[in-house]
Image 1 (cartoon, rainbow, N blue to C red):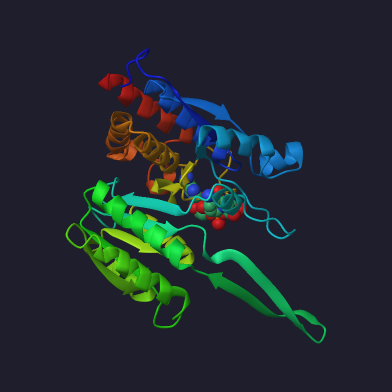
Image 2: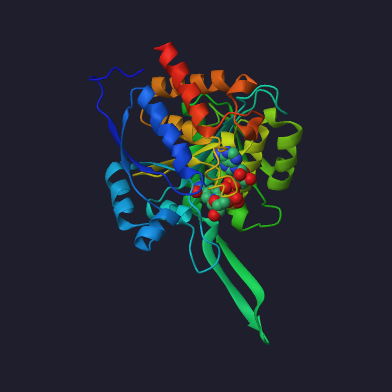
Length: 348
Ligand code: NAD
């Protein structure tokens, strides 16, 4: 627990988001109050809620808050389909040059399909096929006869993310980094990434083992024998797909946190989206966002806060009575928050 009065609160931009966002953010706020609240939340809007109020999915006031705090915890944001809207998540990553997406996954709920999973996916967050260079080529009266997309990987971007992954491995006492690619087919686009990441790996050879896997074989190996992996690093699209797969190994999207890290800012979030199918029904699992907040605490050196929060989560979901519906239990979003708070207070 923090010792009130001896620690200054750290300013954080808090974005409730939409869909299930506000209900899971409410649990995060209540649980952090019980932990002694090391963060001073600056609540800002983005996504559909912001659009309804200001006509902008990502208002300037929200951007300016993140510029000042350099730190944000973000609930999920719905991207309206069609209408020319660009994903707010992608815009945030680009605006703050959040080049590294870190998605750790570890087994918390016992008795699932896989025990003792402890993996970290490091995904390049700004390049690849997500640069959004897409267009159609019309043929005859079909305006959309051909669709084209351009992927862009740079040597500098590949070096930066590979270095991040190896440094992360060293800092977190990890043993191995696996470079994931498709260099047998996309010889330039992911060949450059593979070649550069291997060169970076050689600089860490006395500390960290490294190997590489073709993305399709890697996906199969993650199902057959996930324990052979430790830290994985990949380009934007492959990293996106594999991190959802890895989340599936530990109980699904409700359990998977993510961090977007840049030189001057870091934004923490759940891997999942706004889940409109269950919004407002008390069914959402806030664990992924709580674990994202634990990553944020660690990022700021608040290791005890992160440990206390993870201990409370582990102990609560250890029995079925402490689980939300997505992981086989019956407790509501808010009741789950109450159970965590009871545990945190009991430990004080
Ligand atoms: P989703 O992640 O919102 O939902 C997928 C499935 O998982 C749904 O059945 C949902 O009910 C369930 N689920 C997700 N989170 C859960 C939780 N915490 N507890 C219990 N069940 C949970 O994906 P989607 O339906 O494809 O996307 C919905 C919207 O979210 C889209 O507009 C998409 O663009 C957006 N999205 C946002 C982010 C983000 O803000 N980082 C990420 C992904 C998707």
